[in-house]
Amino acid sequence: MVLRQQNILESVQPSVREFLAAQPKRLLIDGRWEEARSGKTFETVDPATAEPLARVAEGDRDDIDRAVRAARRALDNEWSAVKPATRGKLLFRLADLIDEHAEELAQLETLDNGKSVTESLYLDIGYAAETYRYYAGWSTKIHGETVPVSPMVGDYLVYTRREPVGVVGVIVPWNFPMLITSWKLAPALAAGNTVVLKPAEQTPLTAIRLGELIQEAGFPDGVVNIVTGFGSTAGAALAAHPQVDKIGFTGSTETGRRVVEASTGNLKRVHLELGGKSPNIVFADAPLDAAVQGAFLGIYLNQGEVCCAGSRLFIEAPIFDAFVGELSKTAAQIQLGHGLEPDTQMGPLVSQQQLERVLDYMEIGTSEGASIAVGGERAGGDLSSGYFVRPTVFVDVRDEMRVAQEEIFGPVVVAMPFGDPEELVGRANGTMYGLAAGVWTRDIGRAHRLAAALKAGTVWINSYNMVDPAVPFGGYKMSGYGRDMGAEALSQYTQTKSVWVNLD
Image (spheres, rainbow, N blue to C red):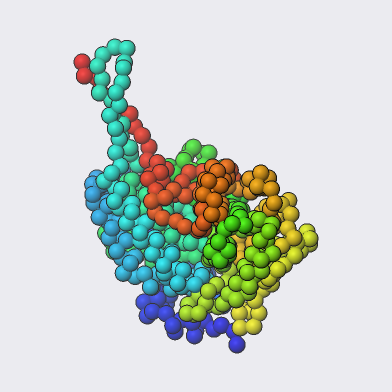
């Protein structure tokens, strides 16, 4: 018997059923929930069952234009007069509301994305609330400085001001919808900007619910606008809009290029967090059990739909066979199922398109000569109606193979032995990406040397996939530029003005 949507929905909170029953989901523009100008809608589905969850307004260029103009009016009027402390209070209130509705939001995230509800609750929703709380504290601490100067003539007081960039377009992906939205929305609002948010078309539901909570928190109309729709229409229109001052984008490298191209009309700022093919390096002196668990979480968290996933596993030759054996055994035991079921450890991929992409790469890998140690197929039986793929380990992989160079974005890792540590750095850095890396060793000197040599925005030592709102996150090379999170992210949402005062 395959998974049935009716049975699944009977297990969720009444508020989730009530939210899903309100059809269609509308756009939030200037404080009002409206249909798309075209009247079009699209369907969002549960990837575990491939059955529909809700119909959502399909915003396009006209709706983006209305949202941007609303954001501009709010920026030029009410929002610009709001004190920093008040901005902080609004963000604190939003964080509290997210906590209050955490289980509801987690269930919506799981229904729309497929991930385990445990991951949704503690990682996505929990960390999102903490991110709003972190930047709430920053609202009163964004300031300029006085600068001592030595002019040729006269006496001057010179100071700087850090001011909001303006109207910010936020385009987020489908793998961590609530979490990555918080990474961009929280610092943008803390710095005094207004926002137009375009969530991924595959996972729009928590963005809509977030909009309701933003209104409940008391943000003025037009400060946050939410336009659901497709990347090729709504997303492209937002990236190109002449009244948008900055775009914060997380997604594929290919789409990131298009965002940059679209930004040239008014030379808007762009901040990109893109793809990855991150190396996870295990030395023979590493504690085997901890390293296997780290490699497991590094690739199989969130079904492998993680930009910084440790998808290239470099294992020192003396322990290669034992390590791959333990990892394969652990992967084979993963419990697949609907994300709302309590025993589920891994849910489905997000869509039919993503399923086909991952299955295609499995064929590519075997055609290039790689071997499958475990997995390598779509799950059948009760899971056959959903987009489930069994966790996979490739061996007999060469660095030049496509499965070792291209981002698969699924539960697929390529395991490769290494012998010469001097060659390791070149191999680890040998892709167009540079988002993250992991190092497992008891030799702390070696760990620090590798951390310096690896071309990656984040290096985890004896751990993997750790994040915190206080720590910057972003990539080198084709993994993008700019940083989310931490104090450094505020530079993406502010601009500096110098003021000269003649004291003579």
